[in-house]
Image 1: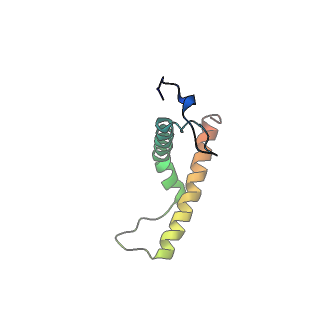
Image 2: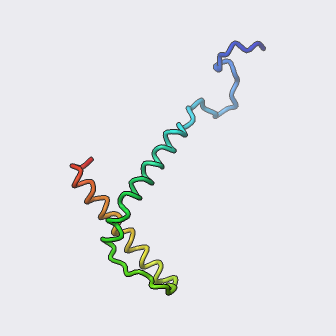
Image 3: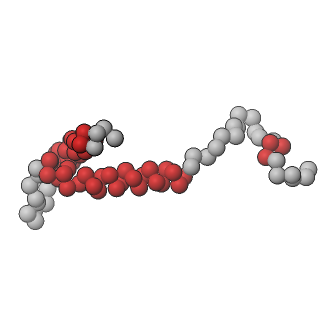
Length: 89
């Protein structure tokens, strides 16, 4: 069978579809944008969380989880505040 560059002539196993592969550069750009947004909101998030510094002591697993919950809630508020200040964009 000669190849003429036409991919439609290639037989496919039953059930396989010819769907485009997700655009990986676009996914990488999206992830990079989300990471940049996270870093931009970090100072506001830390301030809103109001967590005291560790002062060279170790936290228990429960304390770490409680701080993480507080931080996540503060991040959600920081994102909302930023969207409101930017006119909902």
